[in-house]
Length: 442
Image (cartoon, rainbow, N blue to C red; front, side):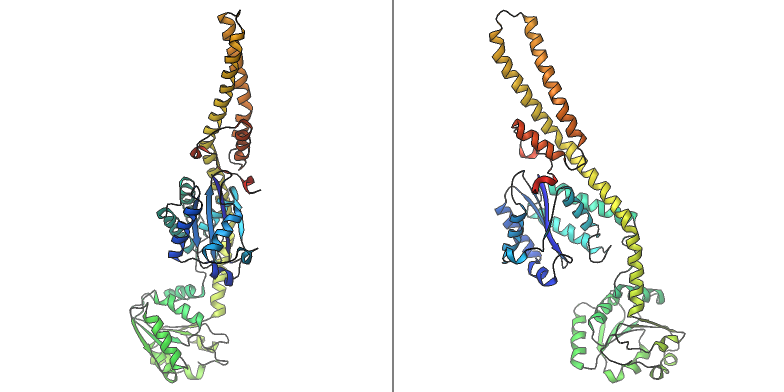
């Protein structure tokens, strides 16, 4: 079977195109059913996330889908003109397709290097394909191997260590200050998008209460309503003119307004620490320009972090992850080579056997033609002639078999095997076919 992947991601296509191509869960299932109808002899796994849409295929030698077929298929599934998608798809065959899948599953191809969500998404895509019966022997072996590679990388390297989003870094900072959250009150000032994302990360720690405030009451009400859908605790809306006074009761304050000047000055903050009995207060200022005067953070019991502070932490984490990238690449390459060697070694047997049968068949035909003509030859001469032909067959077998075995793990064994199949018209069952090669799409 030939292995092929076509797709687009955050680097090859803008979000305007990716959102047109994106499949929800029901859409993936429908697409796989359609694939099974159009390409009955092929296999497929469809991976669709916010950052990528990829179709992994395994097809018979000289079968379909080819690259153009796969692109047209995805376009039809989403009601798009293939011409509209020109230039956004990348494609890889054989060793490159295997390498790409290993990188994707291991989060080396993600927008955020080392993020863990893509592995779960890839598992889900594979399980969906199995239910749809489009993941056969080839992809049924390849994807579990990709999951093993991802596990090895995540276990043996630091590629997934540390937080890499502003929201998750804020949670880490909060955990350094507070040992528990079930008795804490979180105050959200403003309704900015990044502030809301940060807030949702904190809500995963299940604080006691959440208070929301905004200059525009309606926006505060809308934010509170959105949060109530996912948060089991108490959500209150605080009038904007009261939020500084109520801050004395809060433990974590997130600010994300569009104000041009600080809304929390040192003078307005002066009474707050005493009212709090000098308990620790974490302030996360996501706003640009800043909502909180930096001098507020000079108080001994106040921990103030702005957007630059949080992004510095994420950059440090990403730098650490990038340092681990070389080791990750080495693990990928070793596993690609091992996978190719295993597949080729297992599947070369039928090719060699078919070649042997073909040559022995030719020998037998020639013996059947020759023997009646050797009426005066004795039994000993006949045996010598038969031995000679068998020895010639063995010597002819040696060179192509030796060449095939030398190509194990190079990704080119299939090229030579295909040449032998064509030259000697070798007939093999589909399940006995040699793994595909990179030359397939040329």
